[in-house]
Image 1 (cartoon, rainbow, N blue to C red):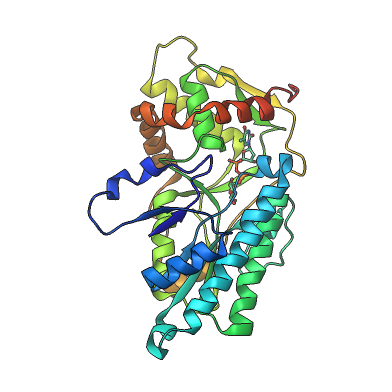
Image 2 (cartoon, protein in one colour; image 1 turned 180 degrees about the vertical axis):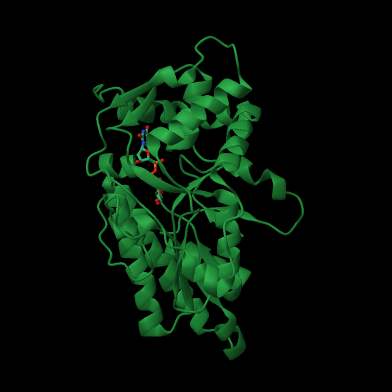
Length: 329
Ligand code: DAU
């Protein structure tokens, strides 16, 4: 059962592949609604809660931080508190088997210099954006529920996801669509900020692995072993789009790249040391960045109807708000 408020980035159509089999249910609702969460737990009797629900776009957290505190902090509190009440009423065997898996981010660790060692599970928290601070706060709540109440929790901290179905406010889908449509490609600052890129299916496999075999109370970092500077990523997208859609006007697409005013407080580099999950749980990323990016470009080219359905008026308002007044560098 998915509980999802289906706000701007949510989309029931993303679940069409699992519709109709009778094994999946989508409930539209808010994790901040304690009565709803309690009644769903009581009636559906889950063996685990996997907490993916979050406001996740850093630029939006700079424009409207309040929504991030509500969903990411208050929402996590309601979900884990109602889960604790449900879990404490289970029989001994069910209580022991139950899991609350909290999906979080490497942004809680702050930023790295070019020579710094990658983030590991014991790196001190130093969140720099309202988004990162809200996720750090939720991580602390989850940790506390384990230490205080013994709730069997697991936490995962991942790097930048990419792949099919990603809402086109994030770097990779935004750049693919702009490149396909011959629009400018807005690279923040000098384009040398570095991210580690994790293919979405590798992330899903890692979450399943942690849910099945992770040690209760532990956190696991999940990375794609693919550090790239933003400019490298955008250039690679341009080359792929030139390849799959040649001769439609503006090629080479890299001429569309524009350096624009930076994101305030922009973290310079993220890098993940995923050796703990590799060593303890035998998970590793299966996708290379180049092949994953190629699949992703292909997916956006082949799914124009999906793209058109998510680019609503509210989406266009966001694009205007975030980009129209960014000065060119
Ligand atoms: O590291 C994990 C995090 O990765 C997740 O927790 C976040 O939910 C997710 O949004 C992502 O955060 P980033 O801020 O790194 O992702 P985003 O796609 O917004 O930006 C990636 C990089 O590209 C970042 O350095 C900012 C830059 N950028 C982004 C956009 C949207 C641009 O240069 N131009 C853009 O238009």
